[in-house]
Length: 255
Image (cartoon, rainbow, N blue to C red; front, side):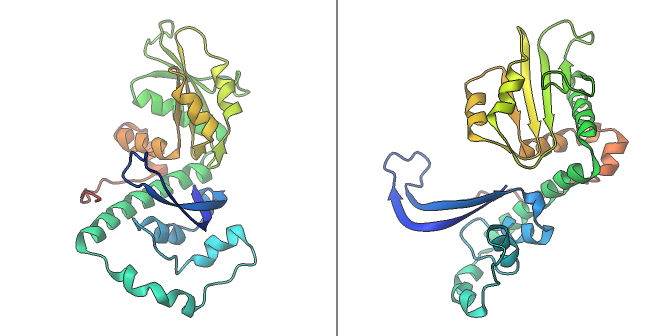
């Protein structure tokens, strides 16, 4: 998701902060938009920075998602920050390039699944991916069975637990908690729930996962990571749909 907000001007200090960032600037969030709704060039501009920066080339594309009447910033609006943004050392530039390469690939994979596969074909792919991970998997009837699209198990015959019930949602939006509750309601003894989407999950759904040992949520970012991990085992038809090749990029610490 691309989360667009506005600084409120209110600064807070959290003395109990555990992450090393006690000083915080409050933000009024205006809109949360799937990355797939933006051009790849616009995603490249926001995906390559590790700190605060000014969006220049594609500012209007982002602003128009919040306000259709938005105009491009004038040259005088953006000239004031040029010097600070250009002061990037070599290590930071290298890390930026590494992050950019990974972000571009993830966006490409998600867009391929959104444009090349139907919802049922996405379920079929997920069953195949489970098999690449060592499971035996089968699709439920096309009409769906109580929110379950795929059933997977380690026992070839499917009699021995654990049994994994998978719900697939081909969306780059945010999946609400009630959808996840529906999957949980199908689970019996020795059964586990796996919910997969190409976007994200609402806070209530994430909190539910934390409190349910039998539930696992896979968002778009994690889904792409699974594809990277098992890409060599994918069937040729899927590798041709998402043609990838392995590259090596520096993995420098981001201080």
